[in-house]
Amino acid sequence: MPAWARSGHFNAAKILSKHEERGRYTISVQEFTRAVIFGDHEHYDPSTSPIANLFDISTPDGREHFLLGNIGGFIERNANGTDQQRYVDAAPLYEFDQSLGFNPTQVN
Image 1 (cartoon, rainbow, N blue to C red):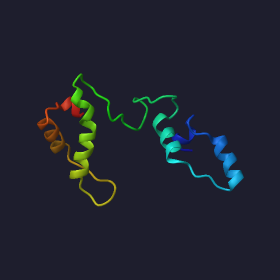
Image 2: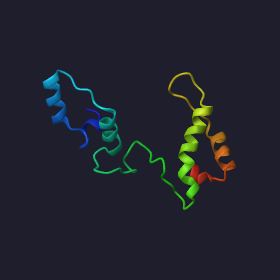
Image 3: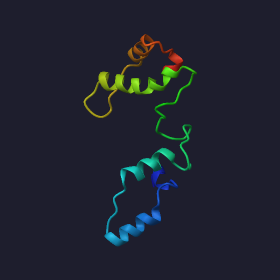
Image 4: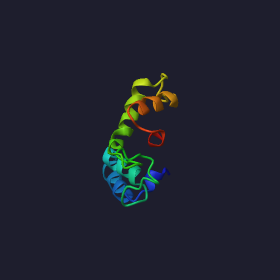
């Protein structure tokens, strides 16, 4: 069973009941996302969640709130590959973000 299916945010009893009643059950995007993001925790825990907090910062630099979104945009614009496993060389990413005034520790 996948980890998200063992989450406390994943109501197995409700799903089984609806499946018995209707013969099927479709997990909603909200239900699935909540289970994946929170995992076994009641609230979001960045140390265990596979989903990054988009607004997390590592320094007192308020501009850093936008860094992860900026990195995502850079990757989207510069990714190489034809399938969903698209990659970007790290050096140009660091160069780009450093040109915006971020230091390598923040980019890490």
